[in-house]
Image (cartoon, rainbow, N blue to C red; front, side, top):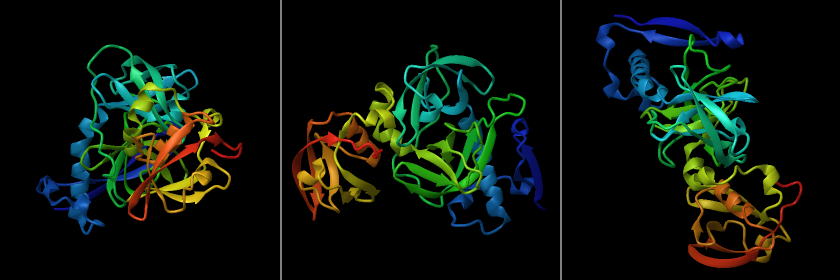
Length: 336
């Protein structure tokens, strides 16, 4: 009984040699997935690698059926269908703007029309909708806060655009960072992967590919948490861009997502937050009675209002809650 290393060459369209190794095994290793080797901190023996491989093989059929290539007159990217009605998650820079007519290409090569919805340049999250009636294959999204550093994951995509002969490209890796609006993995990305899906080893969608790097550990994704926190806004409102944010309201804090919530790290002098008495280490809990789940959500809510609008902010301070009112200011030109 032995394992044989087989090397495969992918992405010939882009002239890029991407080498992955696949373990080819005999029947005696056929089913050891019950060991859940992907839960271990590191693989300890060949059987762990075989179990990880088998788990990936079992998850792929369901994951890849909802992968799409997104095509527009000004470029291409990838996406993933997340509802039977044809709602597609992708990257904001793939759709570019709201209301743009696009096409999505299914794994079998079928091309169907779609229209871009909303999203945010802050996280690079984007949505579009297939406009042709039908029941579309879709995948399940993970819940918020389910991904941890060290988790095994795998990414799908169409680097270089749709290529029926080559097929879907699969890359495996692990989550190495997850902070605010960005997840980082060593699951390698290539041009054209943008907007494609990242899955966990339960087969759930955990992120969308965003920024591609030439370095193997510099692959950046939009966590699914960003979509959950802003779902209705992304689905029903125009895409939020840095340019649009310049004309919106400005509160005046630098904040960070921690386990307890959204914590204030800095209060900018002579701003709405400063005048309202917000302090460093306060937790931002609500704005106008709407619970705040993320830094991006807070920025979007404030930016969607106008300078001069009065807001009510619920804060957490020293174990207690207090409410303050503030009149929003104008965003400085240098601020994003």
